[in-house]
Length: 259
Image (cartoon, rainbow, N blue to C red; front, side, top):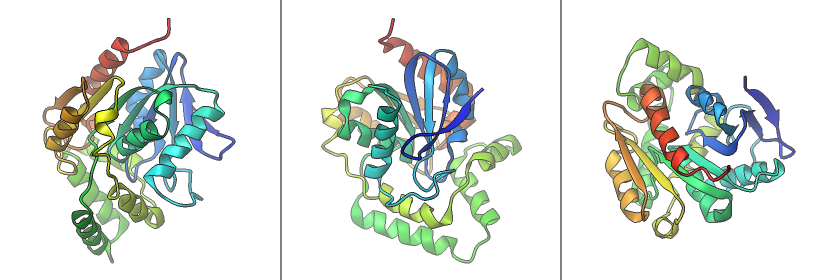
């Protein structure tokens, strides 16, 4: 069973299992419990799953930025006296994982970058943000939540919608600040410097971040592995949870360092 903690830095997080440390970082609008399908990794790993600033229980966040998201996770690991960990991030969480490597590469045993990107052209990003803000004005939260589900999911089954709604809980005050932070990411030079085991995951029908973006990342990160999940959208950890977990386990098994 998972337990909810708050570190000395007031960062809410889940911790369960034992073994090599494995950090799961959620996406935009999600909460830490959104990794529930991956709690099974506690049979082999020490799972650390935080809420990012402005998400879940972390609702007095200070400045929202990818840099600060990463700093929080690094501070959490240091507070727990964890020297290094496997880092897995979905979407915005994948951007945070890249930033953790930028700030503290020695703390990263491996990276798993899921349905994420490494660069957003400024002009395009600004237009996208304006569009999303105008699109959300004067709309009920239920309508916006359903719209998000339809964009993120490939299979619009009742089960998938219910699972999505359970863990997609955007805070309107912090949501667009977090989106803006994502659109400021520029890791064009960072990727070629990554020299640890890296797995890049994409969804065949991802309409949020098209899979060709992850292909570009794969080409930039030397010796990285690249997996595309068929018949999935933006959230393979939900739509293809068994296959997703199997791929992660296979990757982690190859790169475990503890005896």
